Every structure is written in C-alpha cells, then in structure tokens.
Image (cartoon, rainbow, N blue to C red; front, top):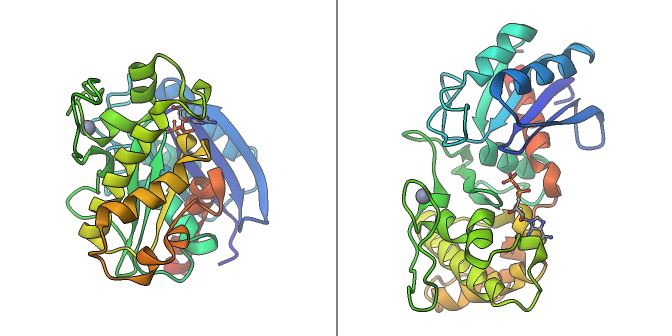
Length: 292
Ligand code: ADP
Ligand code: ZN
C-alpha cells in the first residue's frame, strides 16, 4: 500500500486535493474553492498535471452520487446537478479513477489510519453544511441501492420547543433540515461559530444528534461511531451527545461500550479534517492493489 496516488475530497465549499502514499507522506496538497463545475474541475486537473504521475486517483464527493457512472446527480447546489466529475478527471489525466461518497472515503481514511482501525462495523458521520454518514458493515463500505443518506432520516421534532420548520429543500425538518450549519444559522440568525457556548442552540443540537445516533445504533449495530464536521468544533457537543445517546437508549442495548465506555464509542475523527482526502488516497491505493 505505498503507491503514489492522488486523492480528492470534493466538497460543496472546497475541493481538497493531495498526492502521496500515507498521512505522513503527502507530497503535495491544495484547496480549491468550489465554484462552477468547469472552473473547479479545470483547477483540479491543473494541480495534478503539475505533480509527478500517480497510479490512480480516488474521489470522495458530495452527493447524491451515481457511483458506478461517476456522477454527482440530484444536488441542489447550483450548476452541479448531473456533473460527470470522475469522467472529466479520468479523461483529462488518463489514470484509473475510483469514486465514492465524501463520507465513505472519510470512513475509509479513519479505517485505514484513524479511529476505526480494525473495525468491521462502524459509522462515520459529518455534521457541517450538510449532514451525511458512511462507514463499513461486515467489512464493506456501505453502498446498496444508491448509498445511505443518513442526514435525511427523521427525528422527533417538538414544534413548541423548536418552532423552526427545518430547511431541507426535500423534507423540511429531517435531521439535516434541523441540525446542519445552515439550519442553525436560519434558526438563530448567527453562524454557528458565533453562538456563545452557553446558547440554548447547543442543547437542542445535542438532542437532535443524539436521537440520530440512537437510531443509527439500533439500525446498524456499529462497533463505533465517529462524528466529524465543522459543527463538532464546538467542543461541548461531543460529551453532550455521548451522554444523551446513552440516556435515549435507556439500557436496552446491553453493551459495555455504551453502558460504561461511551466516550470511546462515540468519538471524534483521529485524522480530523484530513480524513476525507486521506481516505481518497486509501481508496486509490485499493484499486491499484486490485489491478496489480
Ligand atoms: P462542509 O460540510 O461544507 O464540508 P464543514 O464540515 O467545514 O463544511 O462545516 C461547516 C459548518 O461548520 C458551518 O455551518 C460553520 O458555521 C460550522 N462551524 C465552523 N466552525 C465552527 C465552530 N468553531 N463551532 C461551531 N460550528 C462551526
Ligand atoms: Zn432532507
């Protein structure tokens, strides 16, 4: 697993690109603002053209995506619906390209080098501009019909306590509609990073996320859940989510990981905000190994 490969974390605000072989051996890295597809993809291609040749490129993208065809599909992000991201890069650079969701590659990064090492069943959630989840079950990245959309599950919404209707353009008050960065901004009128630590927004946020985690634990039985994304920089959130998730499960899931060691069970990403780009590198190395 030491081939020189490229990785791209394609996000709604920025594309993180790198070449390298491992976390301690990234030879070049760049961040490109996500503007319109043609301009953004051109800048990505220029970055890779200026680097030594790589054996493959892994891409983890915001979605929804069509993994087999390498497309971003029904995104509401202006200009990006039906973008042939993997194809454009593969044709321009003439290298094998492998494509998956942003959260699955972050999960793969954590599995290869971070908080999910050695686990066959785990979930990686990101709480940022969007909410998404990926991970492995029985040792395989979660795919299925399309791919999981854990940000769009429904959770209890007490309209008296929280009259905000939610901001998901598809579902209103799904999890992302209630607990993403834009939801916080619209509900409280401030960017999340500008809300005081004792603002009541955070208690509500922790409750929504704990409901989501309890649901995911019941549905998937993960051995660990990794929670990343910009909103988790509010350092009080993780301990509040740990406590409330355990309380919501109410002793029913009889595992010491939940009953006694919740702080090691619901954790931050070890690779921090580099999980995505490193996971893209791990994904690229997998296909090089498969072809060898
Ligand atoms: P994306 O989903 O676009 O990749 P991020 O995961 O970086 O984005 O998350 C962006 C969100 O994180 C924004 O809504 C922003 O308000 C929020 N955020 C950034 N810094 C902080 C902070 N220190 N505390 C709480 N929220 C933050
Ligand atoms: Zn939704």
